[in-house]
Length: 58
Image (cartoon, rainbow, N blue to C red):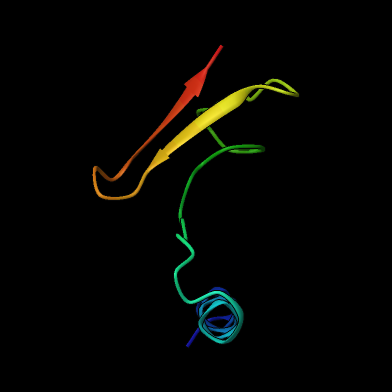
């Protein structure tokens, strides 16, 4: 297992204990990646778990 796998498992374990119904999103490329996906401060986002998509509203 890699460090990121360990971190993912720790997050899932904690959410399972404290909020098992919470939606979890992993693997979104934003921040210091290429290409960059710019997220303005205070912007709204919609996370559609069943549709497996995330939409930023500008």
